Amino acid sequence: MRIEAVRGDITEQDVDAIVNAANSSLMGGGGVDGAIHRAAGPQLLEECMELRRTDLPDGLPVGQAVPTAGYALRAPWVIHTVGPNRHRGETDPALLAACFTSSLDVADAVGARTVAFPAVSAGVYGWDPAEVARVAVDAVRGWTGDVELVRFVLFDDAVLAAFTRALDAP
Ligand code: ADP
Image 1 (spheres, rainbow, N blue to C red):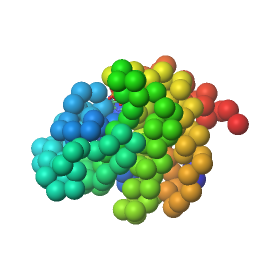
Image 2: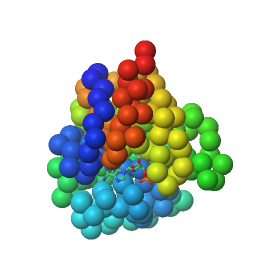
Image 3: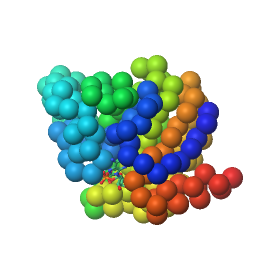
Image 4: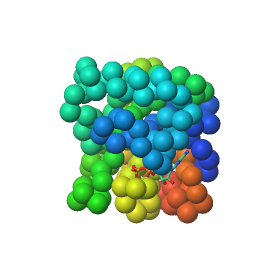
């Protein structure tokens, strides 16, 4: 598997699946979640609402992942995951690692071979980007399956630098 880190907007990625740092309600929000909903269009929220009515009446638990279509996005799939929220005392790195591995499991299940991730939990959820980068890179390196490319798409230079450092570490 190839793993890379780039600066950019995840909504513009030409990959099979982009991962959304959602919240458990799946009803959209700020940050990358809001950007993905705006770029995908209103059908994304409709599918999320349908998921809540059917499979996920209590919402998506932290560390788990669920797929929807990408609608107006270039990516045919959006994989929604819920990062741990440090402000609510969710400080276990295993929960954050699970976001990356469960998203890759979902990608594999839908046949996605190229997957873009944001820095899950590094925004409103309050994790240090350097820790997110270490956890994310370790989780992806330890995962096995048919995904061929993982691209971390980081919104600013500081977070990109954190991921570049984590990728340079052995
Ligand atoms: P969380 O609630 O999981 O912390 P946020 O959306 O607040 O999620 O932030 C996660 C990361 O996503 C932050 O580093 C933020 O700068 C970044 N981000 C925001 N918009 C985009 C975007 N369009 N593409 C890629 N990353 C983004």
